[in-house]
Image (cartoon, rainbow, N blue to C red):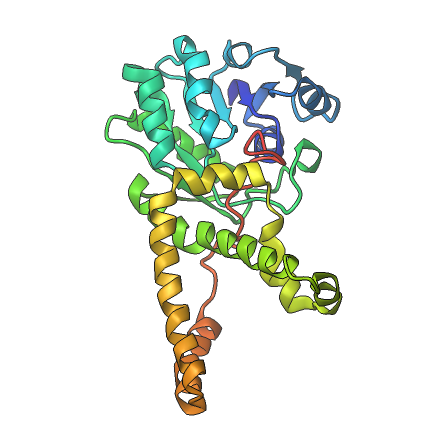
Length: 304
């Protein structure tokens, strides 16, 4: 059991982690900090945290396990603020949806204290963010990706694995580049497309009429366009090279289908669509990956 958990970013993910740790009997006390004092106070009133901190540094003081649940763009500043308390033996984890930029930021901020930092990405979230939606069961049956560096303390990697496993997650390890490339394809690009598609509809003069006719298919396709813009700004910019590469692949596939439509060749179009439909119908989500959201780190970007 851990004596004290420090949570920086009391949103959906940070709050859910705190509740899950409490329910599992893995921590005695939780101290939380959020950039918004009202959110910190709400987390305390809801029993998500036991005490509120006035700064990230105060949240870390005395903790033997720390979860950093802030927007990925805030990672470096947060780590700089707590650097002198990042000590060997204390487990520090993040929950960012991109890992290459987070690790680079951690190296700049922590220097030789980087060994205590274990990069994490829980593949879990909800359509509604905020600490008021925190859920102790959020990580059950979900995947948790670890992307440790060669110099990450292996004992802390094992402790991170044990913690997330105890919360019901299936823990996988990936290299940061492989993680970012994979999630550009299966999470980041779909969000970009959903944003663009919904915009294309709403910019039309008849948008109100079009939306009044939309059914479940439109609802399902555009659901993720309702994600927090600040979160997705950070994710898309942080992983832009991989997302743009996937976007070009998508554009090429769309061009091929549009060319068949232009040709008016129904047989060729059906032949092109058939293996796509068969492949989609045969696909099943991997065990522990039942949510396509990239870890809505808390109503707001991982403080979200």
